[in-house]
Length: 135
Image (cartoon, rainbow, N blue to C red; front, top):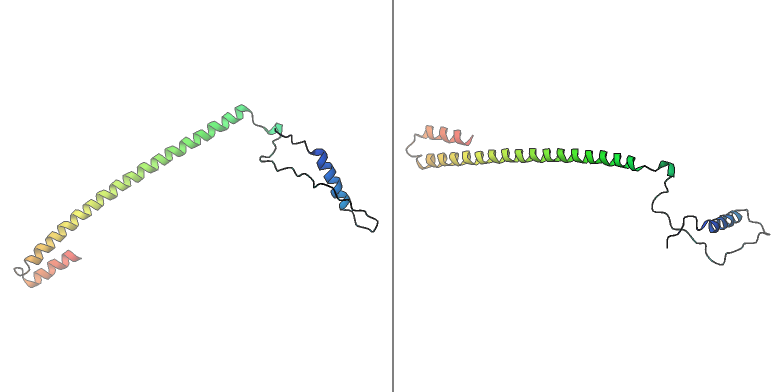
């Protein structure tokens, strides 16, 4: 059963009158009346009440929907572009890392050859070659 928002207006008016009476200054002649039952408190509304003049028409809602849909599509396009840029940069980075590994392997092979043949190479030339590989 759905309750009307105006269902408790009489109770609220009585409660308001009671509050007003209790807010008067207290004197020795004032009689305090206590209600026999506690006042019924209405639960708060979940959504604010909308003035009928402020309600959107179906056309306004459709226009808003189309605008939001276009913005959403534009954001999706931007996201896809960014994802493509990221993938492209990852591919370039991977290519560079592969190239670096190949060059490191070549340098290690040259260093091993120099170390194995260090006795055959004059001492000054060997030191110069090793320094060139390290720096």
